Length: 288
Image (cartoon, rainbow, N blue to C red; front, side, top):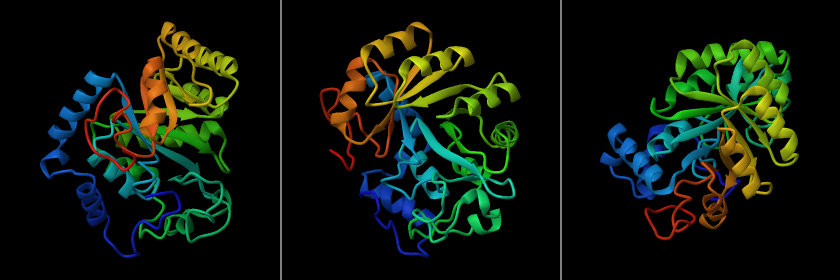
């Protein structure tokens, strides 16, 4: 599947979609169990030393940032799942990436100027799935999966108000999560509200500046683009006790550099991006 694909005809059930996609990627019923996922996850980390994060819930496999994507990425054994959160005009926290509804849904207009009732009714990419609340998305995740909650836009709320609402929901619905953002002020608000919550700056430029932000906030990780990844960044982050997670990895070829440089995580649109990148096949996936 490629970007822009209409995933399924409207009305096809989410669970049938997840089941069908799992079969396409070679999953058996047993491999979808919690025990099976945990065993595969431990094996992957022991062999590759990597965490694999499903970017927007493996957005090129499932309709991005939907309950189906979270369920599907959990089923496919993702170690972590990244979702984006924004606020509607009436302050509801929803899982969505863009500023406007137009490109990804059958709705239109800025999310920040649209009430929750309308946003939550918008269909994502002709899939039959609608925009979920943050609570709904987190409820769909496997409890063993760490959720990477990316703060995109606070809408009518201040970052502090936004952080308070997100962390209240996340603490109730998820056992494992951390917050990432391109905006340092969003991460500062998280730390002001709850200093114990892990954070990670996201960046594709200004490495020195973002390492300073990571130090200021005692960030658990830095989430950098492939374009700025180098050995000095990995060495500095590791010396300071931080993970390095790299986005967005779309092929096993792109996975090679992060692996060779000693990165800790790949943020990917497809599963199994480590196949062949570490010297031999260990699974099946769309980009092999």
